[in-house]
Image (cartoon, rainbow, N blue to C red; front, side, top):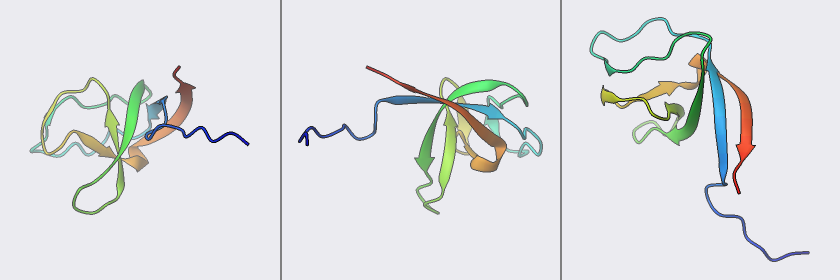
Length: 82
């Protein structure tokens, strides 16, 4: 058995398809995903609620935070980086 430790976070790039782009908040300032499009994403914990949220890489968001609820996305691929 190898004693090699994997880095944290794992060197993967995840991709997700937007399945729900409705109900954009009125006070949201920034890029908003389009339904059916696939985006490179990261999962991040919300600092206040500790719930997992999706951050779309490359999106600009001024407020509230630039992360989206998980129910808006369907994960479609995970690519290992090396």
